[in-house]
Length: 300
Image 1 (cartoon, rainbow, N blue to C red):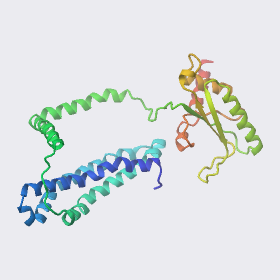
Image 2: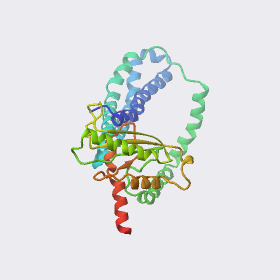
Image 3: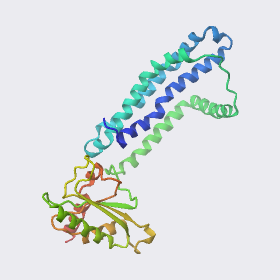
Image 4: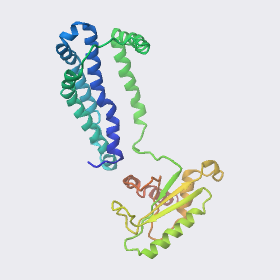
């Protein structure tokens, strides 16, 4: 699996939970050695093993639950699946191996490395946290039926909200810039491609809302970019919205640009820009322009 923003994001999501198992095990070992006092020196190995046996199964299955929590992502299809499956793979791999290491490597290292006398933690911060946490735990255990019932009811109350979310998995985000990606038929010459790109950039720059324009056509110096000469990628940086014309909105600006940028055989594609044109753009390839054309046919 390649290292990209999504696969690395899966590791970033999992890295916090990966170390929680070892922290919990070591914390329980410290508490048991602390409670044993002087006897802990003679029975250290036995006490450490007993402490790990107390929390080991719970930690293992807790990590398995976190591991399986991302399995629904693998059911995604189309663009969403291609986009988020690398994150789900790396996160699942990370948590799965963390669950295995929690019951194999961590116990072995704990027996070998934990030495010396374990002093009790009497810091003000620890005592304050225990004083706040203990009543909450006792309340939840005393009224466990009410706690479970309220949790289930809260989950059920989200169903009407979930049904109103719609089917738009990746809503558009206005980040102050947009990407114009008109595509021509294959076979355009280098000279003609350069003329078209310069003409488009000059037309876009005439809009008062545009701060600067940077267009690219064809393949860049990177071997990973296989864009042909017929594909234009123009990043349009917009001014702050308080400097736009009165009453101008994002949709109105795109509609006005779409009307002006009419080149034969090159349908317009508009979307939010990134530092580099990415596969995410193919999700919305032509969607906005198609909607505009369909709405015009319906009204005309």
